[in-house]
Image 1 (cartoon, rainbow, N blue to C red):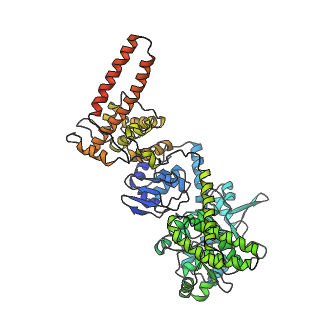
Image 2 (image 1 turned 60 degrees about the vertical axis):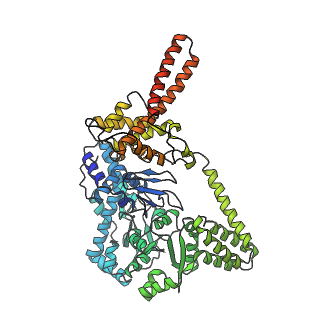
Image 3 (image 1 turned 180 degrees about the vertical axis):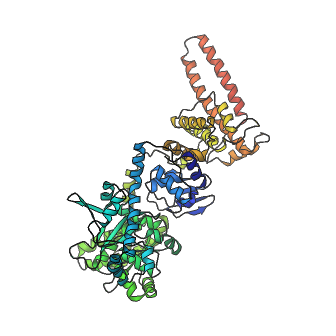
Amino acid sequence: MISPQTIEQITNRIDIIDVIGEFVKLKKRGANYLGNCPFHNEKTPSFTVSPSKEIYKCFGCGKSGNTITFLMEHEKYSYAEALKWLAQRYNVEIQETEVSDEARTMQQAAESLHALNNFAQKFFTEQLLHTQEGQSHAMAYLEERGYDEKIIGHFQLGYNPQARNAFATAALKQQFNKEVLLKSGLLVERNDEMLDNYRGRIIFPIHNNTGKIIGFGARVIGKAEKAPKYINTPENEVYIKSKILYGSYFARHSIDKQDECLLVEGYTDVISLHQAGIDNVVASGGTSLTTDQLRIIKKYTANLTIIYDGDAAGIKAAMRGLDMALEEGLNVKLVLIPDKEDPDSYVKKVGADAFKKFIAENKKDFILFQLDVLLKEAGNDITRKNDAVNQVAESLSRLNRAEDFTRRQAYIHECAAALKIDESGLINLVNKFIHDKVAKEEKKQAAPITGLEEKPAEENTNELLFHPDEAQEKNILRVLLEYGLKGWDDNHTVAEHIFKELEQFGFDSPDMVYLYSTYHDYYVQGLQPSAKTLLYHEDERIRNLVVNVTLFPFELSQRWDEKLENMQVSNVDNSLQDVTMSLNYFKLHKIKKMFEQNQHDIEKSANWDETKQLMEVHRYLKGIEREITQQLGAVILK
């Protein structure tokens, strides 16, 4: 386990904007940053990151947390893996405490694939660059294909020797686990013997968005006759093909800067274009585009240009991803490479400048291209033309954001003219697809969503006094987390003042009880609890509660601010006045509940003595209520 001292060093150095900005394109909005949520499909950004509070929150899907939980959720890291990623990023030396054998085994299993892939890459690169077989067989082939040493080194290309078990011997010598070796796809087992799976092939390491090697592509040298041209890593815990774009790690900054992503099919297309100075390019790996791949692109740009072969297979492959790309809010263009060439061969044939010029001059609007293809396929067949109308209308329905309205209307006008149908009829058909989809989504979301999701705005209009108990309790935890370590007076902190004030009052919410008790225990132990320290607590429940309380969904109105300014409390700042008001409203709410219970008891009272005693309680509570309400007015929430 990582020591508490190391965790403290890591959390003290974390820059949440720096970390989340690696994965999400963020734009500054006031004190916070805004971007499209990486956890769900959204058209309008609702993913908010607060650098001052060191938390993020999506007001669309409800996902929230801190830098560590973001890495755990987005990269599927364990808690320890996320800390180690941050430690490496911020140059913090990790100190570990003693752990059980079981915990150590689990930790090693989680890291083993990354460690193996890193070792394999170094082995393959060494074989390519520094062995006779690698130079004469693999390097000669790569040079013949036009790749120079600089680009080979940049993409960390390698070579697996032709010997049956060259890599197997090296990996087993390093004591890599047999199960992990097989899971990685680097080795296969035949007749109880471990053999190299990629022998005699060029190796293309595949990186995730943070630069970690998660798998490999292995290409046969020369023409593939009986064997497949490529062998790829099988899916495992770190390699999920539908979530990978080859070259995204190397292209991400260029895509962001140029505000355009070029999408090709193969590894060699990416490498050749990079070598030609066109480095805002990634590859789908020859498979149909997936939503996850499109979301990777969307992190950096809304402009996607697909560059595929000009043959029928290339056209079909390009069109498969159109609707998904439109739904993700991408502006999609298509370029088809002529003369039975692919991007790899074409850029080498015409040169970088001519290739760039060709791309710029031959971008086709994807929807209009789709329409053209469908009409050619339909010919004079009425049934196929009807299918084409429906397919175009469904594609246009994907442009359903408010900002897409004008664009959609322009498409409808052009498509209706090309299809020779009434424009209003096409509008009605597009709207039908939109309405059908909305109805389907509403049905799916009919069940209430629990968790940390923001309450609808219309529910936030009552007075704080009359909100559910948990709202009052959250507010007390908010001021405790925010101001607890500040001084209340010369002898006490705010935390100590709150502890004393709440001696006669309790929390009803089990979550608030748990968070309050955890804070109290930390404080008594001298651990200086705060929103930041508890935000990185090892208990996920505590982390979520801190985020929930810190992002308390009620925004105090101007009247609350005026109350803070007008309260006659001398020599204290607004933070202490906030504490005073929060405590008073909390007490007032609890007293109101006591009144209700006491009134119920009076009505059920069986004798005069008991009634008299209950009336005394009533007068006592009334006195406390009067004392508090003299200081307070109604506080309306926005």
